[in-house]
Length: 619
Image 1 (cartoon, rainbow, N blue to C red):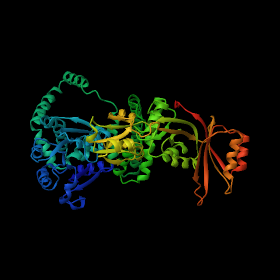
Image 2: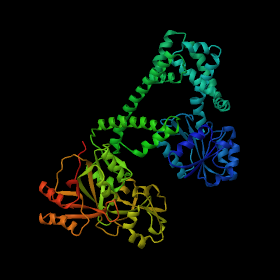
Image 3: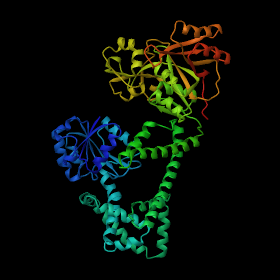
Image 4: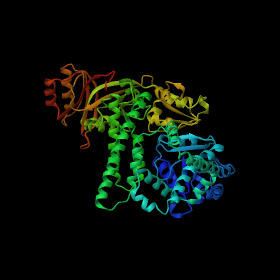
């Protein structure tokens, strides 16, 4: 989905950066040359166009868009007042979605309200709104005929109150601010913010609120008379207390204004830093407290505590909005996230973590859930190397890595990594791989246009594809789970039955793999130093470059009646023709065995002694 931001001012810059850090192809056009990435004549290549120009410029902007854009593009309106603006979109000839972001360009989207006023039913709208939801925005819906009426109260009256107070005190505010309370300072800052912005936009907001403003003024005059009577004043407070009940943590709001002050005296500067540190500490405490709520929600929904992709997007958003050292900012917020996750794990009683190959819906996750029964302690990694490094560095307690498939053989990158890492195997487990043909809807195979899946899954089902889907295009993905994200109404994905159930897909055919006995074996790994128990030993060894050197090693196993169930040779990566050997044998070697091996090898390295594992306790 290619996105154009038409008008790269304040909110335009916000949306451009928002979608950029999430991996979308996003460009900007603006009448100011320095802001534009594309020329007006080049905007025909975009699927979605956010119209982010001032409201008085929208009519002209739509004329340019109508002239140069692809008529299949979806327009997104973000205007504040809808009754004057939406008729232009209605007559534009384009599908459009109208939203009202209830925040400014320098605000964070988290917990900010985005009001949806109009939708065309396009799938791009679902994608956009889902990105807002994942970023923590509150999505609400308001019919277009009610929007301006509601905004008259929410925006019109609140802005009017601040503008009126600012105008009333304009000749004395310079003196009053020296004695101000936190509440006064907050009002002063908010009024300053409003009068510094585009007056035309605020005029439109007040024009929209004229009737409501007159009603409000009559109420204020009546209230002024009631406040002269003590009993009326008491009654007023008692009545309002029943309505305005959210009094929690208002001190944080009132103390936050201190962060916006400008002080020069050394003692005041020290006091400023002290106030900032105190505020930061209270906000960190609030973040950790919120983590406890997150933990309970994730437990109820059986979701993992740690989702690396989500956390990376959060930090990229933060780094994109600061000029400070990005490396240090990353470390700070990574530490904050770690502090919060530690509290989540503590609340849920999770004492150990298991790293697996993600994403959710992968065969590795299916195996992990059979072992531990919950996603909460799972850490999803992008590569097996990442899993091994996480175990080695103590970021997780255990790792689950695929070592062998009955059709494709040994997973050689894992084998090579185990030789050169400080981890050990303490268990093995097996998963039968059953491939399914899945889709978003029930459909006859003759309607399938594209087949998505990982190259290995495609290879294991190639006979089915050739026999039943010869007309379909094959497109490879990085995982079977990623294939699901690309599905549309005319495509299918080869996935596990588990992934299909997880993502609520239709299973068109089950067990489509060419070889039915398709089993993947996994190693469970941990840092070296644990107690070695089991009947299987996995080890590497090297031999001299001479005739019969390997035979001498195998002779040791033969004489002791030790069965080998696996033998592999791997390049030693020293010079051409040098190899090391990997072997799995059905015995836990004792000291005598090791002494004999020492005599016939140049080195040996035991990477694990283990048995088959049916479950793994992470409490």
